[in-house]
Image 1 (spheres, rainbow, N blue to C red):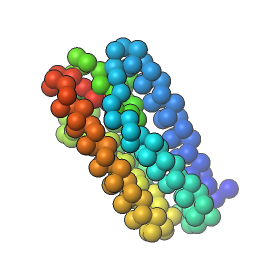
Image 2: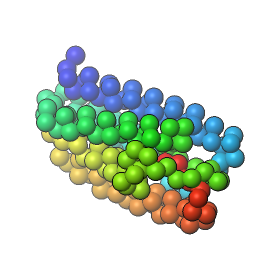
Image 3: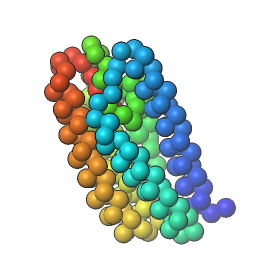
Image 4: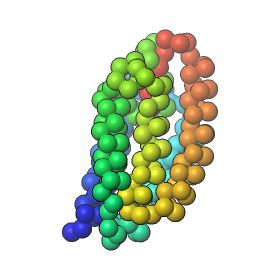
Length: 170
């Protein structure tokens, strides 16, 4: 088994685990009175991330891995874990409004409004670069920018529609 296959298998398992966690948290937040907003773009996000991972498997699994880029990706995973841990049960892949809940102000949220987006933007580029796939890094970065544009607009509308002491979980 090559390092590339090990890396891609680990990322695939991580993403599947995160989807299960997100579904669990989404169900729990909705049971607590939360509601989803901006769901129209969600299939685009899922499709983009699935296509990114499939493309990496197709074109990257048999390629050598650039260790400095892999190191950068590992650092991003530590940041990703920090984001998820900071949001705790409020972390989900959807935009869920939980009326009355304050915005999270711990972890990386002390410094940035949406650190998760910064991590994802970097991941989309860095992992293909670890496999020497510059074209995939550029292609998926552009596509991700378009999807994030829709996502951030939807989230902005959701936040504008609630009082400042309420929260959006992303």
